[in-house]
Amino acid sequence: MSKVYHYNNTSPRGHQTVYNKCMKWLLSFTLLFILTTPAFAEEFNAGIVQGLWYSQETVFVDQPVRIYVAVRNNTGSDLTGTVEFLDNGNRIDRVSVSALDGRIIERWADWTPTYGEHIISASLAQTKLHAVGESSETITVTASLAEDSFFVDYDTDNDGVGNKTDVDDDGDGISDEVEQTNGTDPLVFDEPEPEPVPSEEETGSGSSDTTPSPSVTTDDSPEGIEQYLTSSRADTLLGSITNVVNESKEKLDAYRQTRAVAHGTEKPVVEEIDINEDGFGEIIRTTDEENQPEKEKPTAQKPDGFLGDVFTFIGTLFSGIYTGVLTAISWALGNPVLMQLLILFGILFSLYKISQKVSRRPR
Image (cartoon, rainbow, N blue to C red; front, side, top):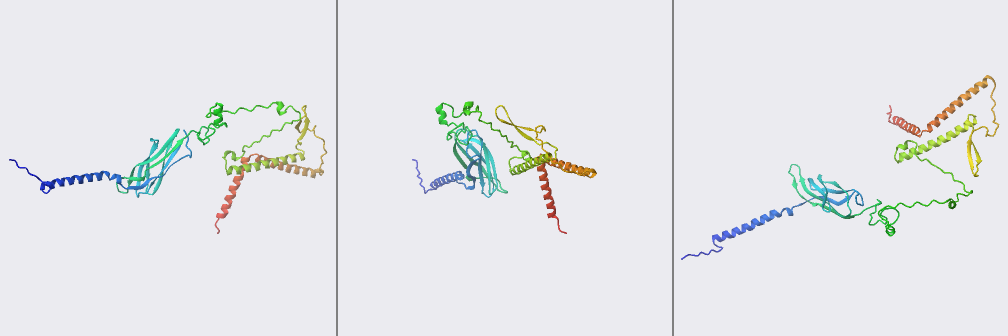
């Protein structure tokens, strides 16, 4: 006859079974805690600041734009990581980040947009702390993602307004609505039709009462040093000096002409008005003596003899010297570059002399 033994929890074998179960539960809980600890790890005060911004305010198709992001580091140690730029989940670029403690640094990526809706994002990953004398430590930051979403449109006429809101996409002065009504392409610039040339009857050019208006041509091209400069205050100042020099030359030439005529070395220019076959007046400039009315010129009384010849020679000599000086000044004024250089040299020389006097030590 066989014997059957029944054990309860109070027996030594029952205590061993309870102990094994408790150990299994304890090991399971410990393993679960170890595996889930990273999920509850401390987040360090670092990450992306204030989202994204761009090199231009409005983004259009096929117009390259630069995307910017700023990364801050307030962890107490040096920080490294990578910033990845994505467009609708497709990588645009990946750049590395190295920020000292307490710094904000910028990173960017160049992007050429395409037509349609876009979600642009920048994510900070692979962040590590580098404390002095310690090994690097992988961390989790408080702000690791920045994201924007917007629509990218065409700008056919490059006026800064997208075709979706632009009433004249091609910029030809004809609205898209009118072009669609006329059957023309609102995205193709239409050259304006030339205005018809009025006939002689419409303009009345055949009438003898109409007199032709003289054409006035102006030459605003710079003559002095300003022709080598871009628009600036120096350009304006030098241009004013050039105008003053030209006006002075014109006045000096007019004076020399009047003086030469008065001394009889040149003949005056006389304007004659002739009437042509059409009945219009024509101005002819001439210096021929035949067309000049004879005028009696007062003659100064000159002393006779040797003394008179001496005075005449001295007067002629001084007159020639004076005329030569006027000619030299007129030639100099005819070169605005030379005059501007002389003026600038004079200013620099004056400043040099003044600085010498000011800096001279009293003995």
